[in-house]
Amino acid sequence: MSQHLTGLRRSVRAGRAWVAVPVAWIVAVTVIDVLAPPDIHLGPLLVAAPAITASFGGPWTVGLVAALAVAAQATIGVLRDPDELFSANHQAQIIALILVGASLVVFCAVRERRDRELTQVRFVSETAQRVVLPPLPQHLGPLRVASRYLAAEAEAQIGGDLYAAARTASGTRLIVGDVRGKGMTAVGDAALLLGAFRAAAHRQASLGELVTYLDGSVCWDLAEPGETDRSGETFITAVVLDIPDRGGHVEMIACGHPPPLVLREGRPTTMHARQPAPPLGLGELARPRYHVDRFPFEPGDLLLLYTDGVTEARDSTGTFYPLTERVTGWTEPDPDSFLRRLQRDLLRHVGGHLSDDAAMIALQRPATPEA
Image (cartoon, rainbow, N blue to C red; front, side):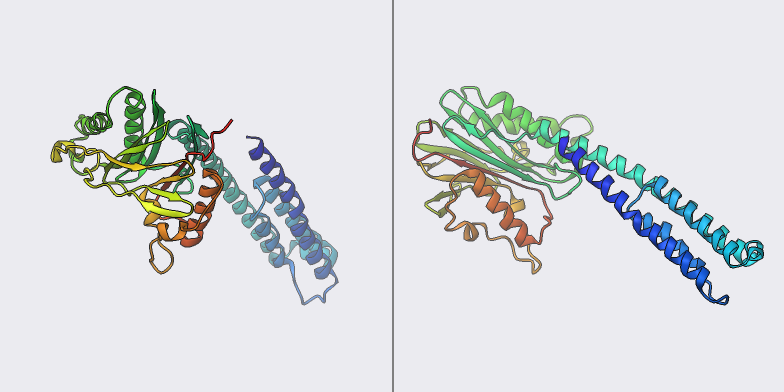
């Protein structure tokens, strides 16, 4: 909030400074027109003053500059020839200035109202994101953690990608997923799955039982009244992990989701599932038997989880982002530094704007226990 107020104050100060430009324009046009030969008329140029002001000022500022322009036009008429003030040509110029100024005032008022609405939408969106998808804590037991969410829609700040973590008696359970589709429907489906995960992940159930419960929750939601037409069309890809605190192998069930990467001394290894399950929400159609894969996650390793918004990001030539190739050799000291570099590199690849939401989670088991 303090940053928003600071930016607003800077914007107001900048606007006040820019007012000098149209005022100087009015003075210059007035002086030159009065001193120019009788057959040269520069008064019509005064309309540029309120037009310039509309690019940075509000309705009151534009109205004031427009009034100054009208006064300047009248002053030109009086100083050049008092009788000219009442001529049809001069009267037409003054009326034209008034009409243009009034139109610009209305335009600025509408623009300010839309800006206020957009600011409110952004605030609501950011609040919803903090509630539905809060950043992961920096530490989960012995693990160091960092998370990033990059929304494709700049004004939305939130979409269908999701992640969450829950502590258990012996470790950490983590889910990263991606809802098929966009908009508020995708946000609602993501919120449903996150709620189900947070409610069940801490229980002393196996990873297979947890994923079965999550799939059932998504299928149950699709079977609700008004949602039957979405059955078989809406689903959620996800990878669910169980990471023990005391080392050993990570357990994983992949449900149609991109595989995690483990980086060891800058060398990435893709952890493919031997028997990947169908996405969540298709359980009633596929009747899956969930196979638990295991892979090592040693002290000093960095585990990267992500959604397909990362690997399917395209550059101007249509080339996908080569994640494994790009992160090879990266030996960042902590997960947050790693994700900052990955975010910069990804946005550089796509030219600054993603076409799909992207979520990234990095976890590291420190090489030496932290105090």
